[in-house]
Image (cartoon, rainbow, N blue to C red):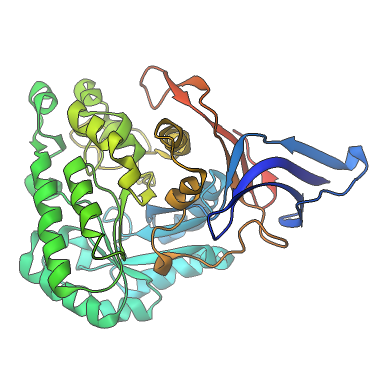
Length: 406
């Protein structure tokens, strides 16, 4: 049976918005624009009037063990993520050797062309020894991931110069010193209240400013900051982009909509790195969201025991994917972001990380998300928090021509 998706808005490569009908059969789009008449019993019509269809969705994910990567990728695609960028994960796979990259690609099989691998700049993702960077690129890594290396000034400069000579992109992880300092959340009244060490927001700001200075002096290639949580750090990167347009920055909608106050009851599912900030910083970050080039989910795979640990022993990262697109769409509508920004903020932030696709044209793969664009509100709960009114919603998730359950 064919599926007709009608009256949905779409954005082309020139950022022009148009209303389009799609005829889908199997996993392909076989008609775009005019939908031919078919026997009513053989054509399922889905009307998505006032919705924006977003394709080529892209996000960064901590890589699971190679044996789990196929099922993880399939699950993420069922949630609406077309293309995955795997970043190192010290709990399961640090992506620090060619063998680890080869094993992941082999396990992915035919889905390997829908993922990119961003290898660790350091061995075991620790700040004391560089990985063999050229071998990682030769093994198929698309970019190099800089995480705790920012704790080692000498190694950081050395790596920047090496990667610059190789001509590949850099993706920066959290611009914090949480693991070095044994911190578990933002430093402030909440960390004092629950008696657990926190890290000041100023650390992220100073790290960002220092790294921007090094980039200006030592690195000319594309750079993406995967996620910042401080509004001042976001502003600093945004201003740097005026002279370096190949620098992009990501923000998590969770940081724009939740403050560290939700951690007052030891809510381990909100333990993130970078951490949720104060209510004041949350509001300022929310106001500056249009400065971001990419929205990221900060979703992490389950490693070991699937039950949430106590707050102190819980690792950074959470199962955020069930909520991510709902929160992202609320942010789009709340800030009156243009429809082409829906596409921009959910696709790859860097052309060098993008995976070739055909968009929503004829013979393209029928995978996209349809977001409501009206300022209608519905109550929605994230994790264990009470429901809050949010704008918009996800009307349809289509993966390989199949409608996914909401």
